[in-house]
Image (cartoon, rainbow over all chains, first blue to last red):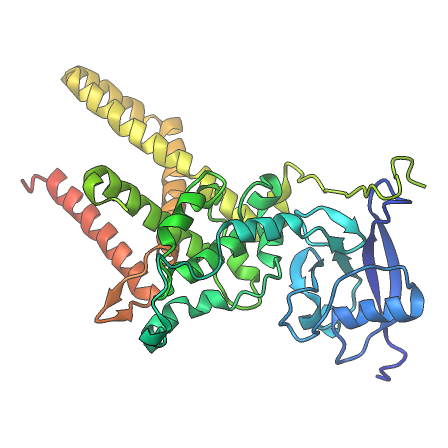
Length: 250
Length: 137
């Protein structure tokens, strides 16, 4: 099959706020090349067919987390999804579900970034030891405890897969909670109680009804659903401790 | 031209979630069924309380209750309830390793062991109830 002649149809959801009151579908025929990803198809549209198409991308290697979109209804990193695997098409490309659409495939990130910041995803210390005390050494077991959660690239596919987030936009959401756990499980961190104050609210861990799709779509195998359920167990244990042993509460 | 559009005042679009959002994907359907079958768990608990109340009212009342349970439509309904209970139990027990991380000798127990432990506890608890009902105590 000569690669140059084979094509596949991309159906892209367009939203140009100055023209459209609602998003509309637009079709493009793009070359179907064996090594092209969905993102390559979009880049072909942008470069050769319609320069007005807007979308985000950066690294093209599954690291930056910018190019997440709904591909045939599934949250996908478009730089990691072969067009040939979706042949004969058409391939439907939409912005990530649950987020406000700014233009075409570009979503508004501010809600997510505010939520991420709210869980304080950085090392919290009661007091810093002096530099002379040396490094914070960790054993391989201590590293293994939080490393899976540190693989999150903030691509927000888990938010798009989560129906709870789409129904309750106040929900802190899977990635932010998984990143909170990443620091809770870090032996250098002392901020678990502070984060629990924030995440034990209804819009924190308790809004999650454990659909589990966030973990199924994660391109980095982070398992946010597991992180949230472990958080629920920890929050329940903390509550019981505060009831049964109020003198030891912290 | 979008008449609501004003330059420098972006008008962002937010899709509304349709009420039957869960019909579009098998995993969502499974989730909804798992959640709905929790009603069967509640029903089974209420049924048990009703039987205890019937017992409390005397042998005749309890016999009436048993006759009610043996009626074909009730029996058919309870078979459905039983299927729902089994579905809820199995899907719930299979999710246990997500919430429960156990360590033995510093190593994390594999997910399969956590699930197997739950099934073992289920079988042991059911066995204990059967043993008690057969006059074991």
